[in-house]
Image 1 (tube, rainbow, N blue to C red):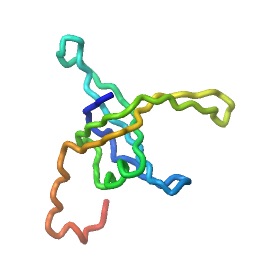
Image 2: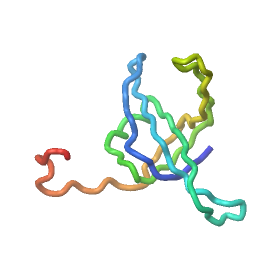
Image 3: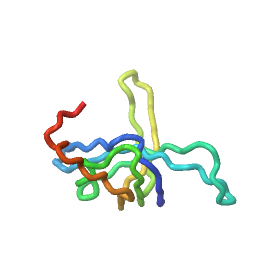
Length: 114
């Protein structure tokens, strides 16, 4: 499965129990009809990347374009109330950020985040 879209927000990067780095993100994919003509709306897809694919994504921001290649996976669990839950996600084999990060403004390195 190959997808190109925009990050809804900055990816969440964390270390898992095994010590490996894992990154989760939500990507907004524009709808395209069967004739190839864009349709109104977007499809939101959850993406998970681990290991080397997840490293270096800490500087990526929401709104940036990203290309993802991976497989569709079904995540199933039982919530605290005992209800069975499920969701689909793409497990990334390859990730590529298609936009460049904007250059830092002079003097902004010392500025406090707001």
